[in-house]
Amino acid sequence: MLVVDDQEINRDVLGMILEDYYDIIYAGDGKEALQKIEENQDRLSVVLLDLIMPEMDGFEVMSP
Image (cartoon, rainbow, N blue to C red):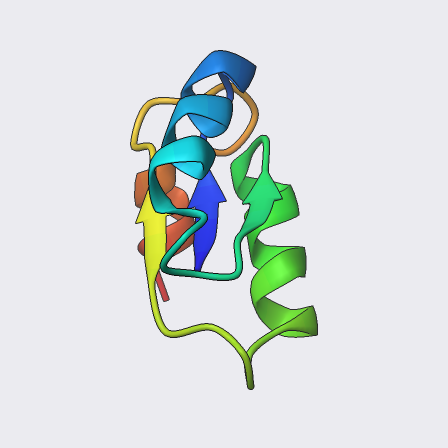
């Protein structure tokens, strides 16, 4: 699972909730998320993506 959020506290809380069920990878913004997706495409089955982030938002991550 990839958790993408620009707020560290949100990443931490989601990680604590989900760590018993998933191996979790974290990204702090959209650009980092795209990099993590490319690097781990064979391992990822779920992406939790914040839509409102600086630099590159979630909508940009999802656009073709």
